[in-house]
Length: 149
Image (tube, rainbow, N blue to C red; front, top):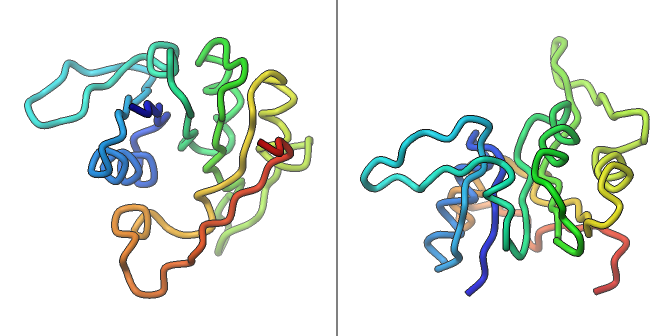
């Protein structure tokens, strides 16, 4: 069975977690401060524990926190790390605010060179993550990375 870790429980992370769980994918939610499990709610894990044994890690945190959160996951040698962030701020509308490396994916790859970084799941809103069947769904999903496999 496939196991994924989803880091962050905001709109995108929680929607992806529900979609993956419906598809039968074992999903671990990674948060800074895990809460005790409540009936019917997915279990939360520490960041490092959520990534242990995961086939892929989906990073769904604010872009400015992405590298710090990814480093807290521990060793990601050979693990697929999907960067779901958008480096934007808000000033009378969205403003692109990429890190000095050029993109969050590049910053992640530089910080975690043994991870297999992929950019994706960030070009449409959380409402599509929650219900991929909504009209206007951008299909196919766009993914980018430099690992041919």
